[in-house]
Length: 334
Image (cartoon, rainbow, N blue to C red; front, side):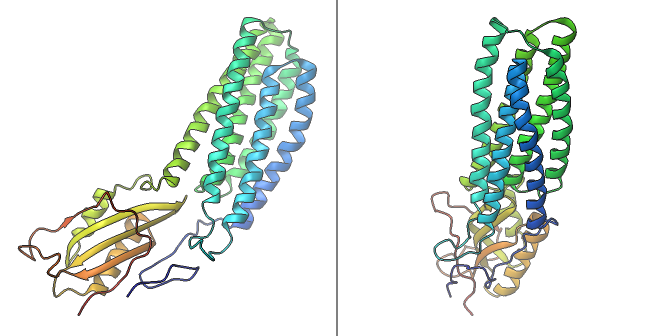
């Protein structure tokens, strides 16, 4: 019997469990509070950066603008992702969060490239910088970013969407610390190039965080196995369970961050209980790998799959050329 696509309920052979201890409403409140802090401070920093002629302050302000955009994107993506599955979107719109994380990563890389360009120019020809103004403004920025970082750290960071916003804020905190040090150096020694050096440090931090977000979001979009799960090891473990003769067409991927899914075809010994085997495998996947969304097609060994020795070595096989089968059938012939 072939199951219908899932549309929000729980079908035979499927399990769900996506709680993370932090409610979506609480996540939105933490992100909104952080957004308000950032927007208020950023407005003043732009003015002070222009007055002080500090590229480091302006780069921090630009970074704070991306922080604000990142949080707004995260809030929008959370709203979209929370919509229930319907129509052709049988998984809902959960991957809106992944697209948001990718956009956050891309903005970090683009800003990093711009500040590398500007920073090198200022190393060659440094302008006069008001170091005292840069120093005190940066200290205020450190305080604001500590508060914003704390707020977002209380949200569910297992979501790449929230993690993207968090990385923006955390990098901005490091940037303000770097800028404060540069402002102190300019103020006390007159070494104007310290401001440009600080902007290059900020750019390096942006590159690191942006690359990490793009890499992790890209793995989800390419349906790679979740980080920390080896499909070969997982398949071998399933094939070693009682009554299991073979596991093939095994696919494991993430629908969205923190939402792993798995499908596989399992062959059971001629006298084995298919339904008991399915329940056993689902418990192994839940307890050992945190995978609660499973589509297991369980059948008895028959002439098509018959081994020379039905009680011989169990094994797992994978067909790399087959696409993922998100909808399968569960059952066996008696």
